[in-house]
Each structure stands twice: as structure tokens, then as C-alpha cells.
Image (cartoon, rainbow, N blue to C red; front, side):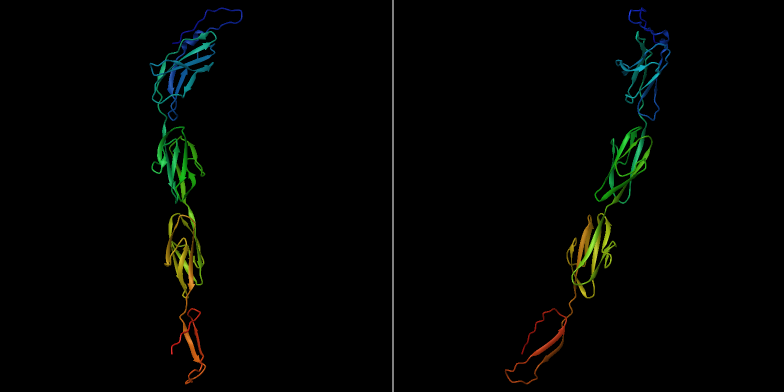
Length: 325
């Protein structure tokens, strides 16, 4: 019970001191826990039966053997206070007294309690799409990768950050009120699932043809048929096999650019944009002699000049002639 603080009642020349009326003696302090979904807090309440207080002083000590210190001063007609500067599992004791210009009343009864921890909720993150990446949280707990769910106190402002792997892009958040492509901050108030979508980067393969001959270049996986379609986009790190097929009147002589060598096939890894050139040469027909004539018939006298004429096709010019007699 709270006893009255009484002062000798007198009227000095300049002011009148007030005394606390006896009704203040009914102060009774109780402590309760705030709703369990919130962070650790303690709620104090008391009955205000005084009629002339200027306010109330709340004192607190940590543990049952600690020393009291004033926690706060509250205005007139206050009947409660929420203390959120507490740690779950630690015992705190409180007492209250009224005051006015005459002084302080006696203390209320002492009330002690230990706040429970905040309710914790599980936040789960998932990944979707053709790409890959990691998701981390601030405060820590999620590193997905490996740890894709964690428990957090109710009311925690949780920030999730998505980091795409090499060759991937982060394209969107979904669920849990998250959206867009930046970091997402959500207040934890219930079990929540958030999904990050990653897509593989794509790179363009361009095939060109060179040389005097003709032919086609095709790809596996399909996409290039050059011929007509000489470009195609492929997902990051796809291995593309190119095959050069010369026309019937040509030969394939080699690759240049992202491929090399003269084998009919080559492989290229699409971890960046790639350019490949296939060179074809026109085929050479064999030499065919179509006529062989002389300007004189034999026999001829020794020393006579004879002119021979040869006609033909194919082969590689210039032609070379050799004679044996």
C-alpha cells in the first residue's frame, strides 16, 4: 500500500504547497505481458485514485536484488506504461509513486516479471527459373545456397538480397510482398515464403561463309542453318557443334574466328557472343586434253620447224607443256 507524503501545511508569502490527498494510498501495481506476437515487453498498470497529483514516477530494477532507479516520469491521470527496453527471460521489478509540488507519495507495492521472447516466424526463400544465384538476409540467417529458411522475431525488418551467379540474371521477386529486381525489405509478422527468379544469360552465335566455293553450316543444338539462318542465341555455357558441308562443286578448307582447323566439325562454348567463319573453295576439275594437232604432216626433212597446238579444259592454269622425242 502507498502511504501519503504529507508536508506541514503553511502559506508562505509567495506560494502555497499542495499535499497529496489520502486517495493516493490506493495505488496498486500490476505487470502483464504484451500480446505474445510482439517483441519482448512488459506492461505496467495501476489505479489512479488520487485527485491532485502532478504525475507519476516509475522505477525499475533488474533482478530481485538489484537497485531501483527511476525509469520514467508520466503525466497526471496516467494509469499504465509499456516497457520495451527489456530482454526476454530477465526478471524486472517495478514500483510507482505519485508526486506533486508538495513531494512524493509512498511507493506502490512491488511487482516483478520476466518477459517472454518474441514470437518467431519462419521465412523461407526459394529459387525459380533457368538460372542460378544466391539469396542472403539482413539480419543474417538465410544464405540460399545452402540455408533457405530461418526463424526471425515478430516485427523484424528483414532485407533479402538476390545475387545472380555468373551467366545468370536476377529477374524478379514474388511472394511475401516482394517485387521488382532490387533488395526486398519485409516486416516479419507471419510465416512467409518468398521466391527469387533467375534466368540464364543468352549469347548470340553468328556464322559467316568465305571463299570461292559454296556450302552450308548447321548446328547442334539446332538453330543455325546457314544457308539462310546464320545467327542463333544460346543459353550461357551451351556447347554448340557446327558442321560444314561443301556443295558438290566445292571443298571445305577451314574454320576461323571462335573455331579453328580444317575438320568438318568444330565445337564452341557459348559463354559470350561468338563469331565463326567457314571457308569454302571451288572444286578444281581434272585437266582434259580435247585436241592435239601439228601444222605439218610427216615425214619432214631434218631442221624443219613444226608447230603443235593443244586444247583442253579443267586443271589449274597456267598450263605447262613438256615434249619428249
